[in-house]
Image 1 (cartoon, rainbow, N blue to C red):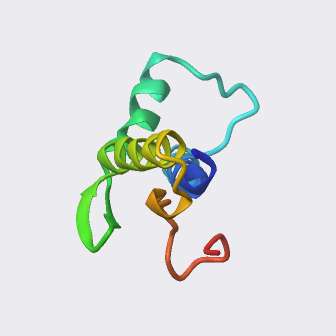
Image 2: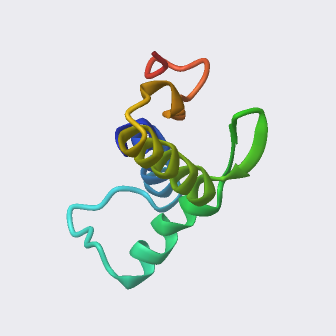
Amino acid sequence: LMEPFRPLVDARISEYLWQEGFSESFEIDTEFRGWIAGFLLQKITYEGKSITVQNAIEKVVRTFRRAITENKTTLYQPWTQRNSKWDG
């Protein structure tokens, strides 16, 4: 369920390293955790609408749960990042 969102996290980390530079003494601290969590507020397109990543995750999980409980795989609406090597 969460793997399609991984490129967003990877891009966020790459952005951080580009801005701050990579250091051998790099540590994951409270400031970094807060910054990286900001990806949840990024806007993405899901089902033709621009929504936050957080809202998209919630919607994906809801559709998955509904597909399982109603035994109808067509109800599951995963998010895919269009125009990327991860699409598909």
